[in-house]
Length: 219
Image (cartoon, rainbow, N blue to C red; front, side):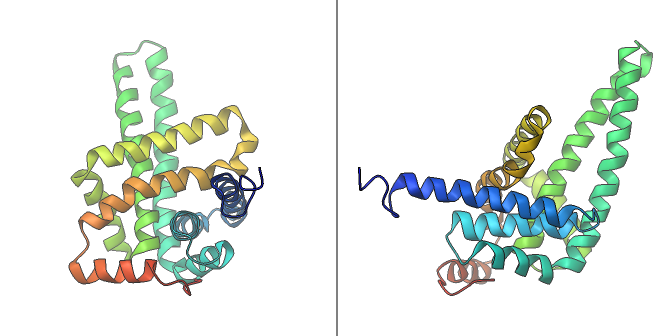
């Protein structure tokens, strides 16, 4: 019994990660409230989920705040672009859904709009992750987010299913918004990091491994 509740036991490790996911989700919600900061907050969400929760590197707040601050300009611009696109596509989905339910000939466009909405959601997550993990311009972030989806469609589908599952649960139980974003992004790190590793240059791969092994990295 003592071993079960020891600090290094699998149970306590799992409970610690659950607590970290809740704290990270609250941080993401709070820092996303001005809306235009949702991009930097989402990039920080990915960085903290990967480095702190998954890799046990540094402290949660330091990683979140460091990424939020350092990537603010690029992530904010990328976030505003993706938010505008998602807002427009969401309106299209509801409009064409109404047309589809009324039996109009153009009702099939609802499924096209829904497909594009799902693709845009996946692209948004990819860009946030790319911003958190790599440097580059806004244009490069937009481009590589799109290209990586095309090059790895099955992994992109996995990311989409995680996101849709989380959204469905939050719509049914709204207060889980304070817990699921961190957990969902943590799950997304598994397919996304495999995508990133597949396209790293040898020198970049060495740098990533070195950073992951650095116990003093608290950013």
